[in-house]
Each structure stands twice: as structure tokens, then as C-alpha cells.
Length: 169
Image (cartoon, rainbow, N blue to C red; front, side, top):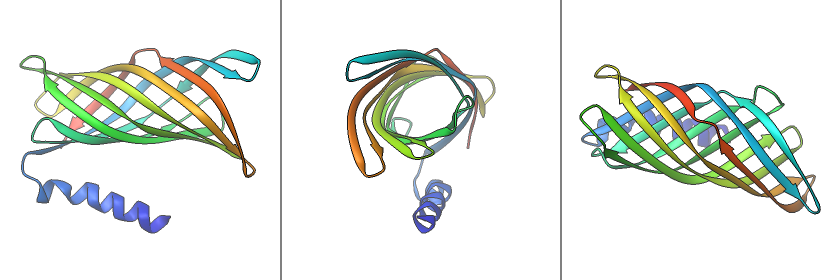
């Protein structure tokens, strides 16, 4: 596993050298809270979550790319790892819209859940390299894995708008 992570990190770091007109955008979320509805069997509950997150978007030729997400949960003992496809389009001279979709894994101490997310993010340029990202979307988890057993369930989360500071490499 360490070798795979090392290879992925090296690929991300060296990608701009090999691809013309590639942008790497690194964001640190200063607010990432949500209210989630969790439904298992005949019971459901509503929960408040507080997370910080690190998001990396790699965009080729100003349009298509991919993202990687790492989000530790500040209110529990878990973290989220995800990624997916990114489509970037210019909205104005200093504003871009990024739409992304992809799989997510939520890892807790003895369990992990598999799901997907769809999000939209506005990037407002503060300087030529710094930007403010405002985003929201939907996260859906469909399966939970615990001690070799799989349980199907539905966990739908609609995050409150996330605010992040970003830097373009």
C-alpha cells in the first residue's frame, strides 16, 4: 500500500513536467460542515458533522482533469478518501466553475463505507495564484463493510457550502 501511495504522489508531483498547460490546484477547507440523513433498515437519524479537508484538482488544458480528496472528521474517529473526474469551465475573467464526480471511501476504526459524490465549486481568483473556493454537492454511501460482513444502507449527505483557500501551481 505504501508503494502505491508513493507512486501516486510522485505521479501527481511530476505530472506538470510532462503535460503542457496543466494546472494543479491545492485547497485547504476552512469550513466543511454538513447535516446527514442516515437510513439503515427501519431506522434513521440526522447527524451534524464537522470536517476539514485537503483537496487537489489537476486540470489539463484548462478543461478536463481529476481530483483527490482527504478529509479527516473532527467530531469522530474517521476520515474520507476520494477522487474522481473534474470538468472546469470559465464563468468570467476571474471565476471558474469546477464540477466533479467520483467514488468515496469513509474509513472508521473497524469499518469502512463505499459511496460516491457529486460537487460543484466556484473558484474566485484573489491573485494570479490564490483563489477562494465555494462549493457544495451530494455524498451518497451505499455499503458498509465491518468484520468481513457487508451491509447495504443509504447515507445521503448534502454539505453546507464549503469555503476553502486554494493555490494554483
